[in-house]
Image 1 (tube, rainbow, N blue to C red):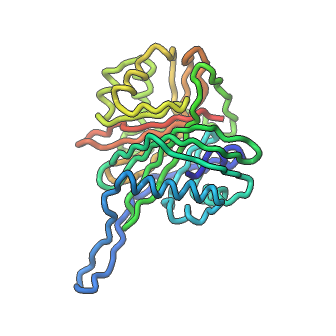
Image 2: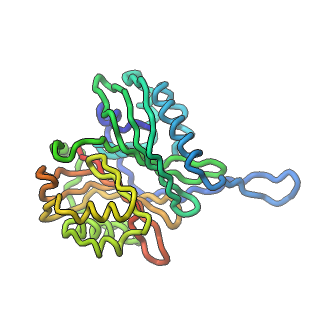
Length: 309
């Protein structure tokens, strides 16, 4: 899509998102047969419709056409890469940069999950033959895009890609100090999502499946730092409670919240764990988690984590 790996490779500075975005609104349209004002509303999306838009985005990246993203992205869109957050302006600018050569790409394992009536999650596996800034991009990635209803269109509000690697061969990389906020994150919204995120991390550290189960939705899914996609709650719980990771403590910093709709929000943050996974020391990660409000309770429903560089 917006090829965040490319933005990292070319050292685009992460943009700091300082406030929650407003829910996408429905644009009014004039009714020629009535004095009443009607609203033009996008139909419920199909997986095929969303994939078509995402495919066009990748083709636009291949053609170095940043203009498509000016309309495809929401104004407060966020891209997450190994170097952290990037905003819409940075994405549009870099898509048009001539240093990327994309020979081909393809999608598989596409999955669309509704996030209420006005938002949707799209995940898929992408293979690519591409080079940016003189560096070869990973041959395979798992990608996630959050889309929101905007009038009669569906627009992308977030995108990230996790490179597919062998967990036992991966080596943690040290994040540069300039890209990382060391102070523990402070809750700045009244919904308590950051508090829940910290509790989820603590439960993961403790291999506590019961606590994780209570804090997550039935439809939860996850893409980890190794580019492994866990499409079901059962698969994710099995991974999170397995003995593969031995962690003593966890922390979260530099957290920012974004609203997709009144009942759907996502959190981007820097996460750290003192310990090892599959025998490798755990490095800092850039994380993104989606929350859905069920009744009066916010629950974790999706996440994607990327190694911080």
